[in-house]
Amino acid sequence: MVEMATTVAFTFLSVASLLFVYRVVISPTLADRIIALDALLLSVVGGVAVHAARTGEAAYLDVIVVAALLAFLGTALVARFVGRRDR
Amino acid sequence: MIELTASVLLVLGAALTLLAAVGFLRFPDVLTRMHAATKPATAGLLLILTGTALVHSGAVQVAKLALVALLQFITAPVGAHLIGRAVFWSRSPLAERTHLDDGSRSRSGRT
Image 1 (cartoon, rainbow over the protein chains, first blue to last red):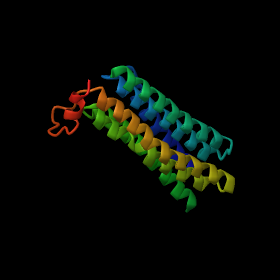
Image 2: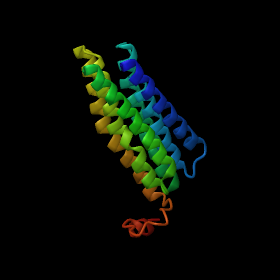
Image 3: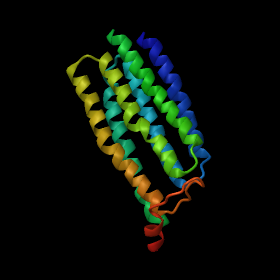
Image 4: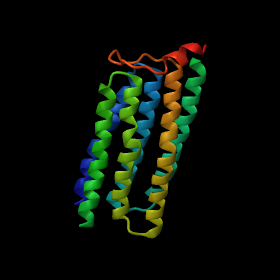
């Protein structure tokens, strides 16, 4: 049951990640790239969580904590950078 | 029963992320795209984390997942606010259908 659900979830997350990557590569503004990168990182975090649910491996949970925090740190830093540069 | 609930939650969270990606490609300007892209940051991730927490039964594991959810609920609005602020001050063009731009005066007053 969980196996099948995680396969479906992986499919959804992969397609979402591909769309976000497309938006990072072909993007109208710099801000779009930041938002897309942030969303891409969070879908990766979601993917790790789904994998943790699939395998029942507890070690992946630490990865989720670190990745979620790094996603915020990166977004905050780059957003500051963009705000300063465009002003 | 628990497995079924966990499966539904995992699929729902992933589907929300996919919907956000589609919205992100289709919406007309940066702020509306941000509106679409920041939904899975809290709601989608919370659904996935809840599903994972249902599969993992240990107290430590569930505590770690709750920690991620808590941190995400604190940091996601802050990050979105920072991006929105940068977009606002960089005077990125709004969609043509936008009728009301309350920020236009304060933006043009500042050099």
